[in-house]
Length: 407
Image 1 (cartoon, rainbow, N blue to C red):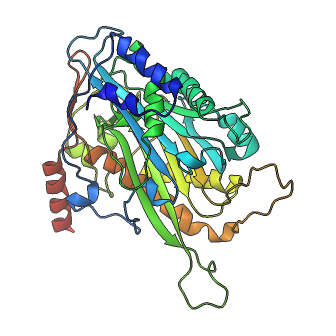
Image 2: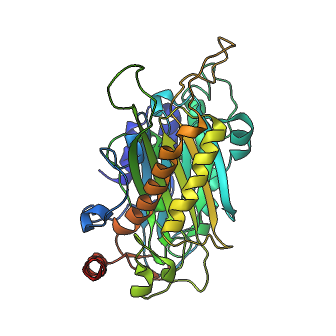
Image 3: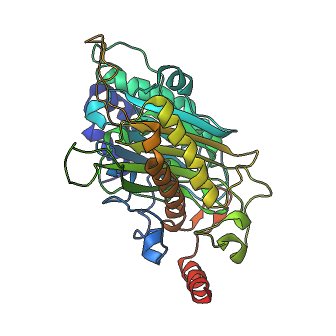
């Protein structure tokens, strides 16, 4: 099945029209074959703190779904508007596609603001994330934002009454070293496909979705994910001898930050041991999405989002001036908290004093998600034959073996 054929499965005439537009667009391309077999950081023997969930992914948080559109085509000299194309779209649906109109409590944090994440003024003001989180390249934020609104209107409107109002959350990192970023290759139908293909369970990493053309610590970067399952003392059935109720914390990153010498994996200065460079100065960014099913309020989720900074720091980042490091956290607890009826609502929450396990889980999962984005990847050649090498597994194994033997 070719890339264009996915539109034949669309669920509305609106999206079928978008298919026709794409077919008639002479710039449409077919993707290259799928990347090599998945290899994650733990498969190389790297040990991380904490207990991961079943999939070690953000989708270990019940209800969360992730979808991608990956656009890879062309090679050789850059021709703006024609390629080469190395980009895409990632969509995170907090409660899944069938409950997109049920907002979740959320909090936003900017570690360094040289980037864009739309819709966050209203997240800060209201405490709610309404709709999906979309990740793409820097120059496609506008089209992705508009496409989310169009998709929701075509499927009944942003709320149950069809009220036509929406402030989507769309974030970006820059992929212009490998991609024809000024060619505007992300189209509305690509955003629609990412939404419609979103699913739970195991998800792809590396050069996929919005992470397709990204570079992290001057190795091939992109999309990474990880999760932790934690117990919080005192939360469970009163009088029961059973273990405390477990909560999941999941993280998804679009990693495009850092210089080679900074890269640190579990305390080992890997970047200094594998020399090489792409840029003369840091020009990248990272978007971090944190999800949990713990019943947290917006101010608590903002605290959770801040902790992603510590996981990023574990991998060596100094959050340079040119880096847009923007983080958002949400909770899938308290369904229907934003409903207007009844006008007085009861919600669940937990005290700040019990949040330490969630803080630790966020730090741990963020660190591992970034390393997964590097490990579960492959070399890529893009515009003007720019080549970015993936983190070499054999050298990484050798470095850790040598390190462990010397301890």
